Each structure stands twice: as C-alpha cells, then as structure tokens.
Image 1: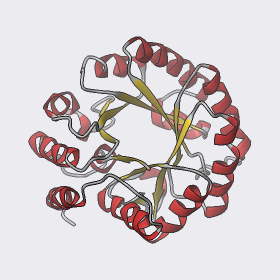
Image 2: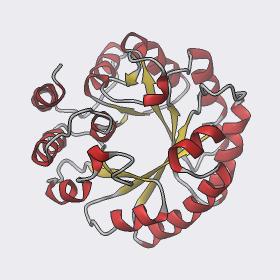
Image 3: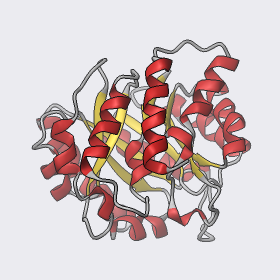
Length: 281
C-alpha cells in the first residue's frame, strides 16, 4: 500500500488560522509515522486559501524522515516556480477537473487552459527532477448537472499519458462516488495506461469509508490519500458530514483485510493527539 497523509487538505478550510509553529510541529509528528507522502501545503493565492499563506515558512522547517516525500498543491506555473525553490519539496500536485464547471471555479481556467498550464508545469518539474501528481477532481461525478461518463476520465488520462504524466489520483471531490462508479473506474482506466500510477483521493461520510476503500482495493488500487479524523474535504460537497477519507479508517481497513503496511502506530497516536489539539475533536 502507498499511503499519503493530507494535513494540507485538513487544514486549508479550517476557520481559525492555525499558528505556523503548530503546523510545523504537527507535520513533523506525522513525519514520524512512515507515510509514503505528506501533502503539506499550497503555493496558491493567499486570498483564495488564507490558511496556507505561510506554506513558504512551514516547508523549510519540516524534518524529513522514513523516506517520506513532501507534496504541495499549485494551481498555475507561477505557484510551481515558487514551490520548486524549496529543495525539500518532492512532489507538486495540480487539481485538474473532469468537470468543466469545477475546473473554472477552482483554478479560473477551462479544461483546455488547465491542460496547457500542466504541460508547462510538467516540463519545469522534469527539469528540476521532481514529481507531479494530477488530481482528477470530480472523477466520480459532480453537483452541477453535468453528465458523468467514465469515458471522460479515459479521454483525459489518455491526453496526459501522451505527455508522460506518471501519477493520477482519481478524486471523489464531493462524495458523490458510489461503489459501482468506483469499481467501474478502477477496473477500466488503470489497465489502459500501465505507465501511470493511479490512486484514490476519496471524500466521503465517515461510515462510508470501508465500502469505498474495498471497492477500489478489489479492483487493484493500492494508493490511497487520507487525513486524520476525515477533517477537511471539499466546501462544494453540500454536506457537512462529507470530509476526507479518515486515516484511522484506512488503518482499520488494512487490519481487517490483513494488508501489510509500514506505519508506526505508536507514532500515529502521537500525531493523532496533536491533531486533536489543533482541530478540537
């Protein structure tokens, strides 16, 4: 299993500003757990996401351990250039939406404009010997009345495969994905593009975690994003109970399915306690 913890996704929509040192201490606690990747911040407009305005100050203070890589989100070439000035950032993430409406709302670009921006970012990332993750937002449906077809995911995966993209996270942005669609996408899409690593970035209700994880896992998915307690997610979900995939539910799933992992659960408990202090749960 390839596991990504997403403190950035948890923190970015939090109402009160989390002090910079608290963010640093929390992320360093997560570093002790042994995740494959920590999604730690965003190089986007502070007006858009005020909580992430201090990412440039947080990143240099992260103490890398356990071969855990650091990932950040960018929404344009300028953000990518700023992020790549930090040597300890390994991965840039870009939100590309299967929904034209959401693409424009999220990045102020239509899909084709976003694609062209990604081409430029991908060239820059390769020249700096870093990695790029594409998040296929709204991969399992959208709240805008746009017709969902798995072939749309296939179309964009093919275009990105043609330029050499290696990592795509199929994202259930608003928690609309059901077991049928999850099974359908993970059965049909990855097999066509063997050079791409596909993963799952689910947003869902807490009690729906197991069935969604199992649907993806049974169709071959071995990469999952999550956040402690499921905090965060997408403000467009229209349901306050929809958050990130809870990390503890991923751990429970792996235990119930007897799946090996390398997480240090004692250190996870320590990180949990820091999260509890930040998010008041």
